[in-house]
Length: 423
Length: 152
Image (tube, rainbow over all chains, first blue to last red; front, side, top):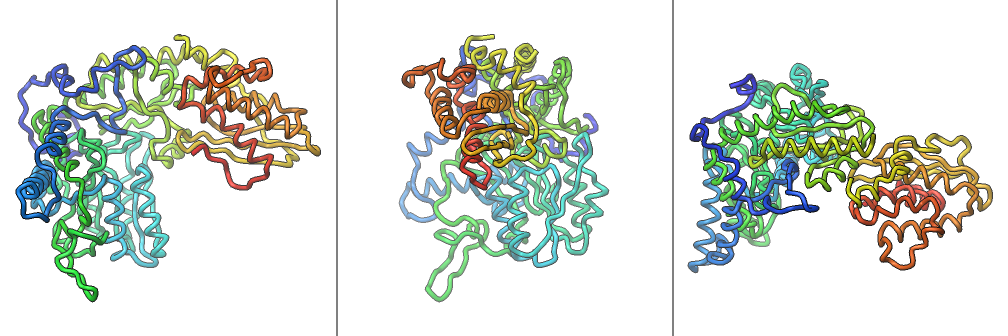
C-alpha cells in the first residue's frame, strides 16, 4: 500500500489475487466493442460518464418487462414487486456505502440534485445573515453554485479554501477559515479536473471540532475507491449513478439519520406525506420525506445492479487496476513533447488532466476523436480550477475499470499525431 | 493525417491559429463586443472602428482553440474596407459553408475568398461553433448589442 492509503477510507474487499481479467471485464460492456471513425473505441471520458455493464442494462430491461408498477401505492402484485425491488436497491446501496441504516440513503437525480437538496433544506435552516459557507477552490460547479445561491438568498458569505500548485488542499488554511460563523463545509472527495483525492476523514474531524457540518461530493470518488460513509464520518455524501457504471438520472444523497430527521423536507408532493388536508400536511418519515413524486424506479434498480457488479469485481481490485493505469499513464504522457500535467497531487484517482504547448485542448479533443480516442476537452465544469492555473481549459483522459495499458498507448500515439498537425 | 482532419487543419488555419493577425486591442474603436463559447471556454473581444458604414479597422483579443482564433484572424483581415452590408453578406456565406458544406447549395468558393480555408469545418459539427464565434461576435458588435454573445 502506498501513502495514499491512509488518506482514503478503505474497507477491505474480497478479490481473488491476480484475478482481475480486464479482457473478460471488457466483454461485460457491449458499447466498448464498437469502432469509431474505423478505429477501435478507446473510451477515456469516464469522469464525464461511465459505460454500463450488461448486468445494468439487463436489470433495467427486466424491471420494465416483468415488474413495472408504481411504488408504495398499489395493493396489487406488480406494485409489490416494484416496491420490493426499489427498497432492495436502497438496501444494497446502503451496504455498498456502509451506511448504518438504509433510511439514510435517499434517491435523487444525481450528485447535483443531492447538493441542491441539502443547500435548500439544511442550508436554509442553518445559514443566516453574516454566516459563512466554506468550499474549496477545486469544486465542480455543482458544488459551488448551489452554495452561492444559498448565500445570496440568506445574506451569507461564501468562503473558499485554496490549493497548492500540485492540486492539494491547503489544510491549514481550511482550518483557519473555519470560524464561529462557518455553518457548513462542502468539499469534493476526488477532484474531477485534477484527480486529487482529498483526505476526507481528516477534514471531517477538523470541521466537526469547529461545529461545522460537512457535505462531501463523492461523484468522482465512488467509481474509483471504496467509500465507507461511517469511516469518513461525513454528514452528507452525494454521488451520481451514471459515473458509477449505472444509468443516468439516478443518484444518491446519503445523510446521517439524525440530521435528515431534523431538517425540513425539500420538494412537496406525493409519497413524501403521511396525511394531507388543506389545513395541514404531515410529512412522511425519512427517507420518503425527501422523495416527492414517483421516483426513478428503474434507475434505482439499475444502480443497484451497478454496485452489485462493482462489488463482484471488488473495489480494492478495481482500485489496484486503476492505480496501475494511472501510474503508467503518468509515465507515458511525460514522453509527449510539450505536455504538462495539471494536477500532480500525491494522492490521485482516475484523472490525467493535461495541456499541450500551443495546442488548445479543443483541438486535441478533435484530433484524438478521429483516432478513436474519446477524452474531454474544456473546463470540466470547474472554471475556477482553470483560472487558478491561468489556463482556459485542459484535455482530460479519465480512467475506468475496463481501461487497459494498450489504450493509454493509443492515447499517447494519438497525442503525437496532434503534435504533428501543430508542428 | 486523414483527409477530413487535414481539411480542417489546413496549414493556413494552423498558422493563423498560432500567429493570429490583428490580435490586439484597438484604440479608438467605435464598436466592441464579447463572444463566449461556454462549452469550451473560448472567449474573444472584437474591436471595430467604423467610418460611416465602412469598417476601417478591426481587431480582436482573447483565447480559444486554433479554429476559433484562425477564424477571427482571417475574418478581421478580410473585413477591412468592407461596408456593414458586405460584412453581413460574407457572414451568411461563411455560415452556410461551415454548417451545410458543399451539399448545402451552390457554394461559391471564389466569392468566399480566403474564408474557403474553413470549408472543412462542416464535417466536424462540434467545431462549427468555434469557427463561427468571431462572426457572431461581429454581428453583435455591428448591431451595438451590449450583452456578450454566447454560442449556447
